[in-house]
Length: 38
Image 1 (cartoon, rainbow, N blue to C red):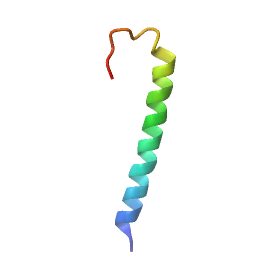
Image 2: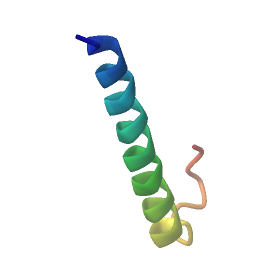
Image 3: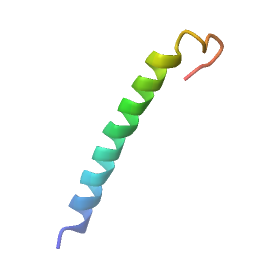
Image 4: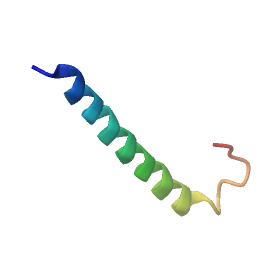
């Protein structure tokens, strides 16, 4: 049983999802967040 491979795959998938969320939020609110960093 390869539990570590499954965990790595889940972490990779979650990283992609979080990155897409951040990109979407950044594009939608970049005009308003002039003082926000990160």
